Length: 414
Image (cartoon, rainbow, N blue to C red; front, side, top):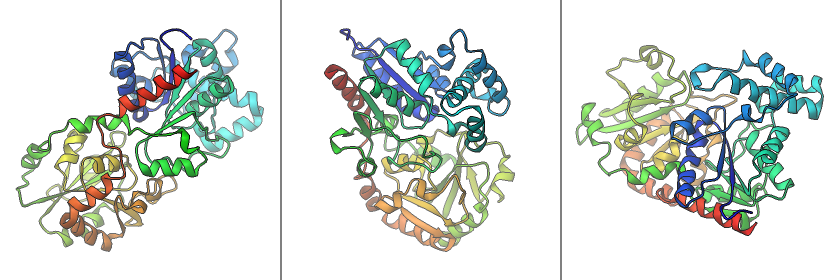
């Protein structure tokens, strides 16, 4: 191994890329200038926007990959969105090499059947990740927790005797979208952000000796927020010192029971101001159509920075968005919306995807009637509820350094 180890980072999607950005910067400050960052799908544009050079699946294409590229072109129409900032060439390479890997392992007929049923969740790119590790020859492989490329990279690295580090994003759970044929991988070091996640990964088979309570690097920014960060926004929307702001962080294009949710809050806390902030990927509907209620009753805060919106809120409502954890770290009481509220009770989105309420980190509204009571309790006992929840999580501010320390330590042991 050279005096300065080479690390290969593998991540998929913009949210997970944000976990790696502060870690990569920390390592660079230490003189680790030999870093290869494979940003799959929207991770690439996110990393490049932060000034971090990336590689992608197009860098793994070799002479003789004509069949793979034909597969990529075939699958491109139903999977590529140029608005994401991903090039057509990268999407073609990603889809083509990923599908050819399925064909190599399963045969074409079964590969097509699996892709037709699961889409991208059918992938476990063992072949492409073997190419990546053989090409860049890292001394340590670091990956985030999505299935597919990350798990494949960790598995191949372990087979080749290369140390591995996995960074968990939320609670260390296995979402229902991860099929059984994409098995979990026990990395040499597993970095988690909470005692909840530590318990969950150990229950899933990770030895306690592998677990490190580091915190989540993407939340370190919250430590720099001033206590008054949300004051100006509250004033701007006409909220006085006695008023209360109840924030709903939406996760899909539609909120079918939003009208009922608003009515329940207004009935329980007549002076409360209600605000909605939609996920950046789901802002296609016009505000009037989306809200379904007069703007005077609900304030849409899509254009405001998330950190400022959370700072302005007195209570945060969520189903299973990661903004729920950010609200907890910001010291805001959290209410999770159960299926009886009519909000996002779907096959792909449920309160039990992020069951903070099961650990005492959030209140649960089982229906619209209990929602009103939960909001009143959160406004009354907010500081105590928030403090209890925060005790379960590593405070933000130093997580990137802790993760970087683990990468350095395991690379030196190799």
